[in-house]
Length: 403
Image (cartoon, rainbow, N blue to C red; front, side, top):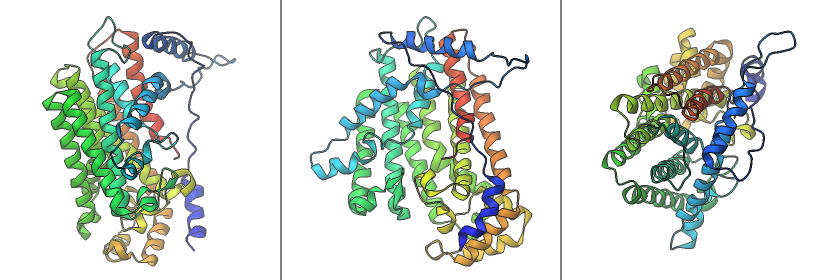
């Protein structure tokens, strides 16, 4: 059985994530900007506490979601209204992952709204309510990005014949593959029709279409991989960028374009999204080995059972060259992966530093993302600085997550 073989691996490499910080209730009847600055005062007052012995306490990370939770909630409500179709069955399918409690982490809207605040050029009032025209366009971009993201998840589950997603049955499992594919197509059409009407910016639409192109390219790279490519870290990282990081990186750059930022600032926003996305995928690869199906919301060991080789195994292959032959032979046909090869690969991983090295690589990409935020044009506006710190802290939260 696989489980006894995995126990030493789990005991040695699973690290607990640091507890997420939380905000006290936000005062009622205040504007978005006032509430945001009130939150920043709370964190400003707690970030420099000292212990009784006079030693500085660990810095408390900002809670990115708490800073823009009202806008994220509004986006969730708007998405539920947006995905209504003429045919009731299509409405049910398209809205499956937008139901209350099924929305997932909503990382894309959080990142994009914080990025919009972090690169604001309006020093007098960089963070305003959703009635502001520019802020409304940022929210619209966040909606579009989330529509594309959910489309990619639905289509991925169809291609992978996955049974679960976000801790529940996958859409293709509940309604069948054909309706799932059509629901994804419908969401994608909604994304670009919304972009054309609401954003009215050719460069932004081109960035979004590039992201979709990259998503498709990444999936083809995974489907048509050769034995040599399967053992290549460069190939893996390029595929990971296309499948996971391309959407958020191009959307971050789109935020900068909408803000009228310089090309340099737009590239820094892009770099933040790129490295954040790669770091996220690297941690996902770790959790596929160390997590449980319950914590992940999908099956654990799903990648390796499909013959997909990820960073932990690639690093293990550097320590144990004999693992390369096992991977090239046993994983040659993803539809019929050799069970013995899978178990042997997991055993080699348990002996290696594959998990630790993957975690270090994720930390490197998280630092590169944070460095991109530090490179943005200087600002003395407190709300801008708080947003930038939240984006930097988000990199740490994502690499310390356990699900």
